[in-house]
Length: 313
Image (tube, rainbow, N blue to C red; front, side, top):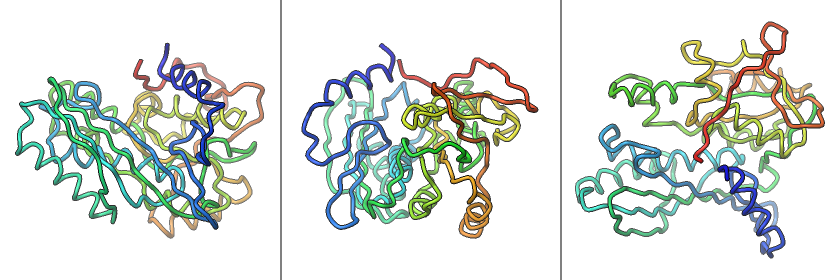
């Protein structure tokens, strides 16, 4: 069973459960309306040594920041600000007191920068691997929540920054080149928290999610949920060093992927740049289709590259 096959199996199994007001599986966070126009958004993510990080290539302080950042990215993708987290850590004996203190120092530094409280969690022992799990909680107007299912035919498709740096950085790390700029970006991703919360209030922004597994994989989640297809202009993908394959297939860039009402794109881009000092990258458009597929266009011609995003299984 594939990773997403397992997720779909779980979703079907719990489809008839009483969700007590919580939204079902399918977005970066689950959402709970809490009265008026207020909602909570909750997500969880796990980092496992040897799968998501190598201890000899990542400092404890860097890992503390990354563990938080990847969860804040999910909340940002819903269009809300994060307000609190819970942290659980399983540590083997060879990750001693000094490692743990450095890890928490990194986690605390990003929490303080974002004004986010740590309100609970758990600690336990592990046989030989470090395992980290974070729960992030967002809160804001229910009307600001962005969902993967909200893309509309004609929408422009955007990404919030250059893609591929993390994938190139991982290649550097696996080649034991730990001090390259891209290796640092892999170890220290930056969640687009301010951009996500700002876009939550923009009605012309329809669907949104973050890029954790690569554009080729993550865009398909929006297409399936919204029952549409996409045309992507390869030459407009903001690939780091011109490495389109890393930009499309590599994971852990944590840039936002979103769609915008077609007749509002000029005003949106102008306002975005005025707010953040740069423009997002328009890479294609949503089209009508009977199947959720990505159509890759190079100089106006359709191409069929075997691009796939990251999958755990």
